[in-house]
Image 1 (cartoon, rainbow, N blue to C red):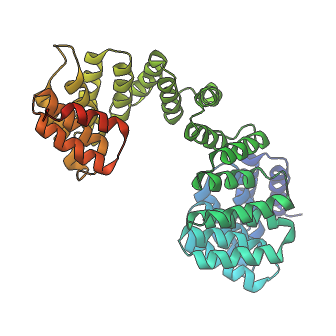
Image 2 (spheres, rainbow, N blue to C red; image 1 turned 180 degrees about the vertical axis):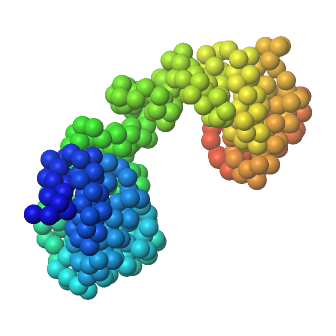
Length: 397
């Protein structure tokens, strides 16, 4: 046995034993002695992938294909890796070549389908998934889930439900099918069904975060505030600084009349992202609910430092300045200015912002203007609260 052959065998043995560093070292020495062995590059590529060095893995697969350009297995391996690197067109080319050389490589329909989907080539992606479903029954559930996701991306949630249902008939334990079906239910505003499917998907994978976050959002839409808090607690026990989860829990605390708890959550967001507007805005709303209007004003002003043209913050600060009964907070002149700006930014189409402008005008004693703006708000949203306010603003006949 030659020295090169001995090193190749040592490298292969190390690879099978998951000793990837030794595999790279042995195969590198073997390749140096005999660079004509395509398998050496291919197996070293596997070791590099296991070590997380994707550029070197692709370079080795390229080298293997230069030596054996008509090897479907190497083409398939490179296509799979190119997909992960988002080199979709190159991956498609490898799939095309491999399928011409070996039409039996039906697993490549899914790889090529993923690439077409990522490139926005939906028709080609659907065709590949359909071919995979027909040609590879053992993996049909997997292809159905991928096609279901594509249907969802294309704005067809009912087709997503159909494919997910079919996938689950083939494999009732497929957590990904439950998750994609949950996303379709969410899009269709069937939040209870979405929450139930997200829960099943989470149970199938105890480490998965995305179905747990999906369930959290579905519960929020259902306004099941205790369940939102419980779901958020579970997620935050895993990762205490997840902003979206802190925000959901804080909003739930507010809805339940627990502003102090909401302030704590929003304060954590501010500390993590001190240059982000949303943390200050949320904390400001919680401080306002807690009765600390002066601190709320400071937070709203800080939020506007981050994003001066945020209409929601302008409106909220205007409301505090217009409605406060505290002399050191009340500022109806600036309230009208900010409310007007918020309305301008939203093309005068937000009833709540027009309501704030009306209240600011009333605070300045201009009840005719207040009534006029209130009427415009009612045209957009004919709610009883606005009608009652209009009665207060109209001067007596």
